[in-house]
Length: 238
Image (cartoon, rainbow, N blue to C red; front, side, top):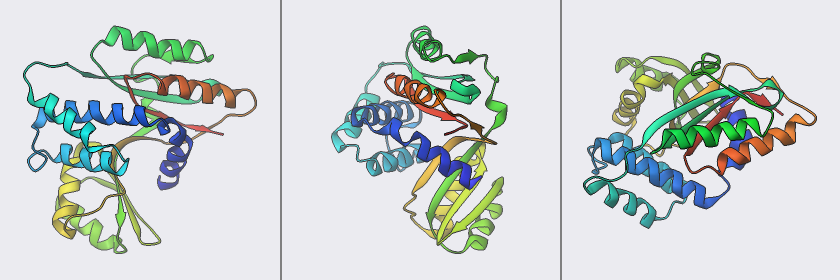
């Protein structure tokens, strides 16, 4: 599972190249997270982790502060999570996660990305059963037994713990994300996580070649250009 995660991160790296997209993505996520769980990171574990990830992605402080200030105000935008599934170029499986204040607009925009790249958008559940929905934590540590013991002691549903040259990667149920994070912090103190996210990890891969490769790149670029798109997951193997 670790290798599949790394492959996906490499293949999707180019979709995070545009700094303005990264800033917008984190700004929107921080706003939604603070709006629903409170603007104080010490009392909102999800917000604290999100801010940490934003800083690692070099999101400026003023972008973070603006999102928090916006969340403090009354009213504001009402964003909802939207997830779309389907088949990309070469028959690869794709999941697109969005935060939207206008589901009809977002669906139309995402569907256009599919239709313009010879892809096919499907119904909810069309491909998600071929992905593992997991919480992932990666950090410097060399004692996988101690990590596993801490997680099991907190009744976390752990699917795998890997140790690669002193870096531990934990895969757990997405429903246990906050429980797992707190258990690791309680056991090892404040951790500088390289990764602490919920992801869709493909269970397998779909090789693509020939004309499908540039078409897939176009598909990912089109999705990345949409403000509402937060994450794209796929099983394409170039």
